[in-house]
Length: 218
Image 1 (tube, rainbow, N blue to C red):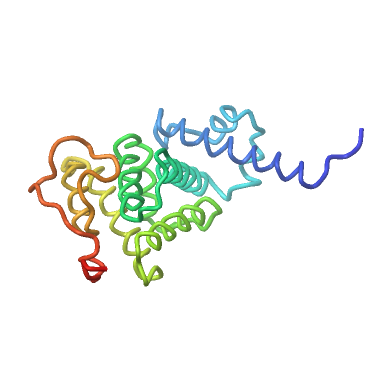
Image 2: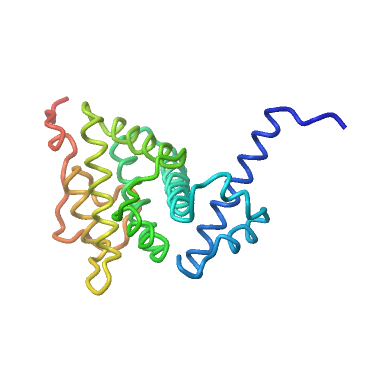
């Protein structure tokens, strides 16, 4: 039998890594972070325990990469769903709804992730985090930003703050209120993206061009 080519080996490593990331998302969602062991993750992924150490420095780094993968896959699905669009306002609305939806749909996972980010580890600079950053930055550019290097970090911070507010134990803020605030900030009409149902709090809509400082006549 001839040895596998470098490209085949690379593809096998990629799939193995993705199985570990997917297993991490599933198990932490089901059991929580503390009750999920690296052995559990390897078993769910059908991988050898040693592969986790090969790909990731530790459990916290594995979790962050797994969540960033979930986020960028969810964001890409939202941006590319039918009907496809090049409307920057619609794309930004979809991005906001996708991220807020993860907080609602995966509260245990996202709360654990936020806790890790707020601790000493900070962001893990992994391929999944870089892909997420690229998608958000590109969305900001397609929305019409002329200063993406400034506007992208602001969007990221606002989304993180909204996710934290949704997940705050004992005093969570409603998704609709947070969505309305973000949509107001970016001049997005309530019906864009995937509205959670009902009218916007306050019932007010805004024009993106005003937020960007552009003339209505353009």
